Image (tube, rainbow, N blue to C red):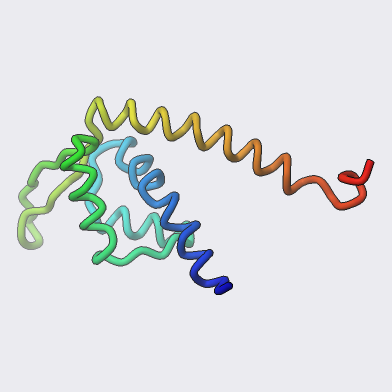
Length: 115
C-alpha cells in the first residue's frame, strides 16, 4: 500500500470542508484561500481550487461577485450562500463526531485494549 496515496486521500476529504469554512467568514479572494490553506499545510494548487469552487457554486453552496481592482483586472470574491451555511453546519456536526470517535480509538494504547 502506498502511504502517499492514503495521505492525499485524507487531505482531499477535508479540502471542501476547509474551503467552506474559509468562505463562511466573509468575502474572500481565491488567492487568499490558497495562502491560508498553504499556511495550514494543506497544499493546494489553483488547478485543484478553481474546479472545486466551480462545483460548490453549481451546487449553490457558494456564490461570487466581481470587484474592480486598481492593481489589475477585476477580482472574483466568493461568499457562502444560505444553503452553503446549512451544508457547512452539517459538515461541522459530522466532523465533531468523527473527530471524537477517532480520538477515542487512537488514544487507547495496546495495554488498555487488553483490559
